[in-house]
Length: 72
Image 1 (cartoon, rainbow, N blue to C red):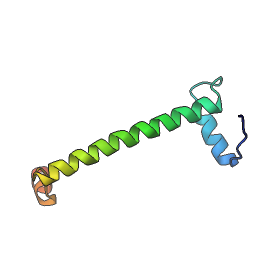
Image 2 (cartoon, rainbow, N blue to C red):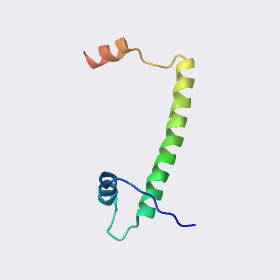
Image 3 (cartoon, rainbow, N blue to C red):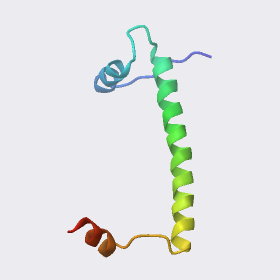
Image 4 (cartoon, rainbow, N blue to C red):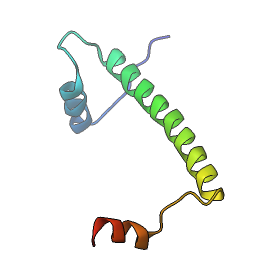
């Protein structure tokens, strides 16, 4: 099924600027953006899980310790 979506002129311009080439279709561009977002979400979830594990094990830096090491 093929469908049409309506976007503002600002979004249309932004999408055009993000094309890798003039021959790239908007569908290809949107798939690439969705894939990037899905990958980022998976990576972010893994990083959050790791941070929670580290925190529960006491592996974290306090603000004071970071400031001290940075000489602030």
